[in-house]
Image (tube, rainbow, N blue to C red; front, side, top):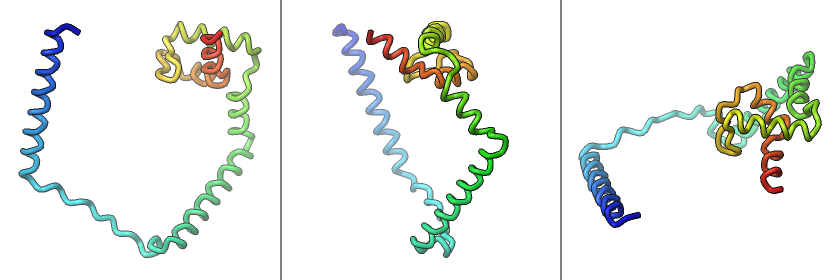
Length: 137
């Protein structure tokens, strides 16, 4: 960074700090808005009772999930499709590398332009792992 750039940066920093202080002082003139009051129903006031209600709700949700999963195996079948690709490790690695370049995927940061259906395949092929290991070797 040149001396001129450093001086410009310092000037911008000072100006922004001055403006922040001015805004804070202007805001200090006005009272803060009142905090909302959310009255708690009496059945939720006792922590033990609340814990029981939460447990009952979670059990109902779990039962609904089991019932949903058993209907035609919809969710289970979907999970199997995602978790176990029907291609070899080498084919998966080639596909992952191709998609990474073609759709500008940045591992751990952005899907780039990768379409949603390929994002699902990306996860089922464990592309993050394949590409990370290919960068190491």
